[in-house]
Length: 275
Image (tube, rainbow, N blue to C red; front, side, top):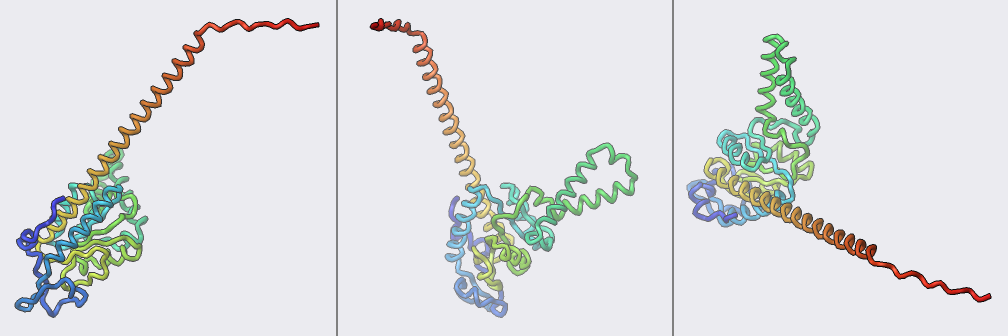
């Protein structure tokens, strides 16, 4: 993964924070200066935090773990859905379903319901239903797909949660913290970075800023997945070579046994017993 440059962060507007009166004092270490009443974020620290978060996500992906992306704000939802789809990671871009993490089993029931509706639609029984019943089922299916379609493959709790806006997604952050799930987030000057395990100080409102940072996270995940694939491939090859060697050794042993069996045996000498 290539390191994000200072110029890329600058061009994306990652340095623009909120008005001074809206700031969170905990963001002081990440603020470079104030200009016209607006806080300017220190991009060198943003750069360092992006690298730190990306390395951690790469290790998670390498271990085969899932990362849940959360971005329900208008300027972020389409960007996140498009970029995250590349690595088949789960994401929430519509309304955050309360209790999605803390009451995960109930959410899984809703996902299973969606799957059962799909089976019903594919069956011959569906054609025997009335037009009104079919319409109700289709509407329910669309609603479930909109809210839960992107997490249909999430069979267990995610190993990490990436959030675009800490304040807007405060429920998601609270649920993750309650379950000790590591959190990654773009943290603006009006947010509290102490709530996040891997905060990335940057503008969380500009679409270019969001796209740049999320893309770097996804690149790191992609790299981790490729490393995992290569490691598994090497392990399979080593196992195959080991099996081949064992088979060769077994064949050699079998041949030696056959040779031993073919060799003529000398008759035993009988010693006459003395009376």
